[in-house]
Amino acid sequence: MNICQSCSMPLRQDSDYGTNADGGPNREYCHFCFTGGKFTDEGITMEQKIEKMIAKAKEVNIPPENARLMAQTLLPTLKRWQKKS
Image (cartoon, rainbow, N blue to C red; front, side):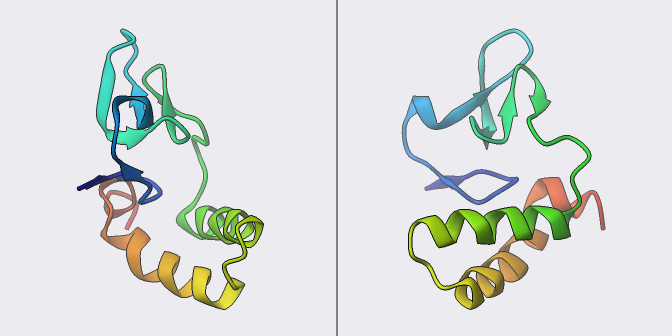
C-alpha cells in the first residue's frame, strides 16, 4: 500500500492522491497535502506538521501521546521530511 510522503495517509484510491500543476495525479502525496503542484502547507516545519497531525488525531479519538509517538517515528522517514533534515 502506498502512503502520502508528507503525512503518511494511506493512498488507496485515485481520489486520495494529490494533483500536479497540470491537474494530473501526484502519486507521492495525498490531496490534503498536495494540490495543483504545491504543498497546501508550504513552509511548515516537521515539528509543526507533527502538532497538526496530533490535533487531527484527537478528532478521531486517538490519544495525543500515541499520535505524537507515531508522528515522530514515521514523519522523518517520509520523502518530504528527509529533504528538510
